[in-house]
Image (cartoon, rainbow, N blue to C red; front, top):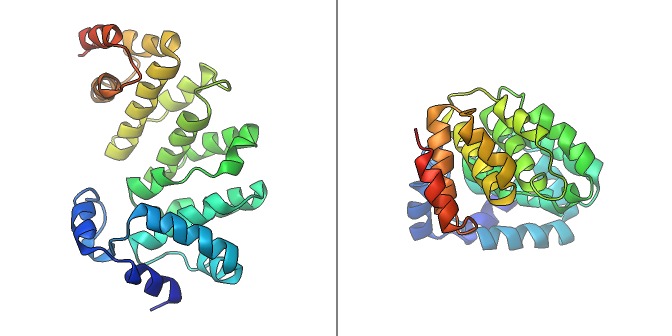
Length: 227
């Protein structure tokens, strides 16, 4: 057992493992240790500061054996302050992500300071053949490009993704539901013009109706757009 694996098992919570495993149907329960996210984040922050060689070696150990190792890897990436290094390590890591939770868990702060470059990588990622690389690319468009850096052209990037993969379709729905909350006037036309497949269209409406950021009168209108 590696040192990092030992640290993870020292923080194991079996009840949490059993609960969390139910949310992760795509991975074996045997790979889930059961470490809560706040503990993983603190561990990542502490080790990144105090044990740079351990972290550097860990980056080279892909693929990891345990789910929590993947999450720790993701949280290490958030600590990197050099954009070129962060994006290079992110690109190495993405093909090894095998679940939605790890995919959605990390948003490096350095990305916000380099949005033009991030946009180009997001375009590349959504054209991948790997489910969670595509999902991460759409997630970047959702997390960084629905506010002041928004362009309606980015809708076309997400709409161009054609896949029957559940975790990709869910991210598309999440993207457009978030767009309805942040860029309603443009986002509503995607639904009114039926630019999404039926399942993603209805899931977008469902997620938007569940959002506290969307007013009740808008939710009433969205219900009428279900197909």
